[in-house]
Length: 263
Image (cartoon, rainbow, N blue to C red; front, side, top):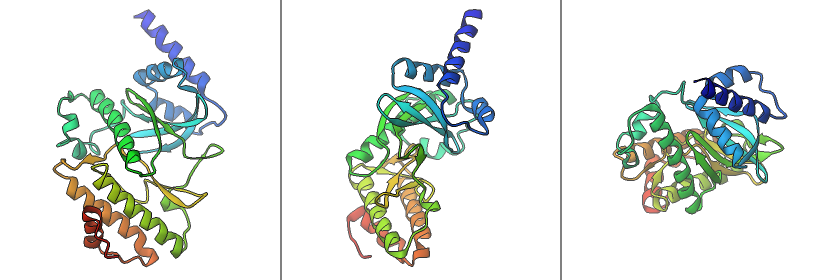
């Protein structure tokens, strides 16, 4: 037991040494919520493999995960850590039930989170292959997903909800998102399931959208895939209504499923 505790302490010290540059004002709270023993061990493994060189400040905090800036082997990357000790299945359950990729997973919290993390990596790969701009996945280990960092000088690109747009740029972004949703459905055989202005980033260099948070995306076989698709459509149309984009939900649904563009 003493040897085990010493090993954990060494891992914890290693993570502390990896912290770099920026100091999070809530670093103690973040550490308590995120860096449990399993996560510390996983970070230690990734560090020893040379996949991450140093861990930076918090980029974002979501319902089930925190994202941190990190230095990778060659450039900056983003580390998404799904919380094990404080997460619940309330926001995951509707996506897990009916997903064949979870059929043989034991219903323990840790096993579900590990499977969810692997699923996000696979979803990102499928979306990327379909021609959708998403963070490029690098690797996954237990409850940690390492991805391309999207931003400049350590500052992530803004979310769609936080950026000022004129009508012309908004229409262009809308058209790209609509095409992304069609490609996701037709080519990647996925439905995002939680698409909104909160999980679309904007590359401020060319004002193009980037789809993020793909962990909950479901295959078309999922019994609620159609419900999730319609919800995604309504979320996107609600946001863009302020720019006088009046595409109907049924027209957008038809375009995504059948390629029929009546807009």
